[in-house]
Length: 253
Figure 1 (cartoon, rainbow, N blue to C red):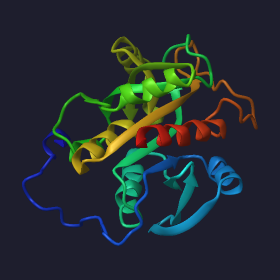
Figure 2 (cartoon, helix red, strand yellow; figure 1 turned 180 degrees about the vertical axis):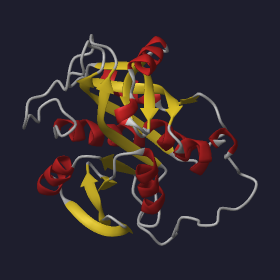
Figure 3 (cartoon, rainbow, N blue to C red; figure 1 turned 135 degrees about the vertical axis):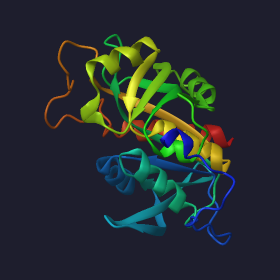
Figure 4 (cartoon, rainbow, N blue to C red; figure 1 turned 90 degrees about the vertical axis):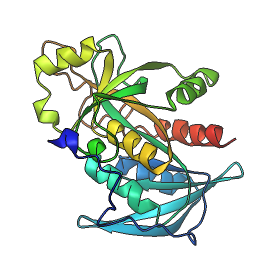
């Protein structure tokens, strides 16, 4: 059973490469959006400092100098296994103990406006990756949720705190499971949070995460809540990178 797979008593057959000679950055920022990646490369002073490879191709990693700080930046992949893999591999390119991650998430409460920021406080572990990094449990606490919420409050950014539902199978978000997770207090559904938190706990890293409220599940029929080609208020909205880099600055002060 997957609930029996956590093993911290025997060595991993393949260990991620970690080099002490890699450049140190104050924090690393991850986006899932190719459009935000292009925005950052055009609008921030980015220096390519390395890359890592998956079968899908090369992932460039950049450094950004910002207000006297140096931040890593790269575009990760959607889904827990691949996203966790990029964080593991990034540690061969840069050194930091802080990862700021942001992206879109489905909304489980129709009262939360499209495009509003959601801050996860705990994640329901409806995926597989986290069970290899943490002992089995239904939930994992998002440890730095209070710090992210405090940043939003201090900067006047409207946000909604709440639990999140991390799933591997977005085409199997059934009505009954939606009702269960909403009753549990989940305000969002996404594919990475539980696994990223488990990884960070296992590797003694700090995760700072927020979501953009996207499509709506809390409706008689699924509501995409965006028009074709719309960017504002979606996970491709570059304004959310501006939030992420200011959050990275705040948590490194």
